[in-house]
Length: 108
Image 1: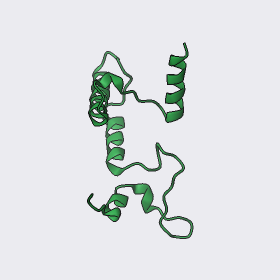
Image 2: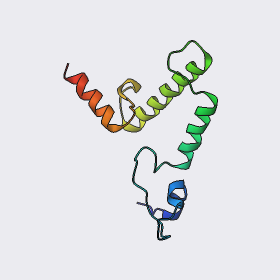
Image 3: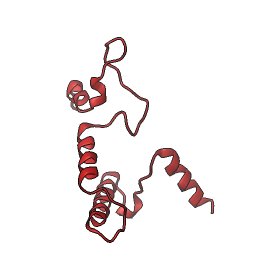
Image 4: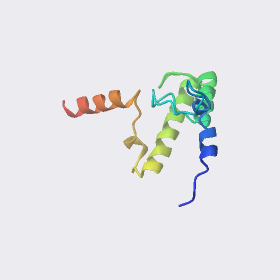
């Protein structure tokens, strides 16, 4: 297994540039969906919010772009996870709500 260039990896996470109270580098672990986000993800979110932010299944171009983006991301995750189809991939607001929704759907 190749060695990781830890400085190159850390440089991709803007939150890791912020020092702790004593000036030493730290990992801010207060929010798994927000604190430790790689710079490329932040750029993609920013681009989406500026250019395409829309509700799903609407009758306008921004909605169609959003639906296509969600489909493409689900397809990419299906490939990454080895799922048979993009329909097997689901995203939620956070793990707690996703797990709760899944549990509720199974208990009906």
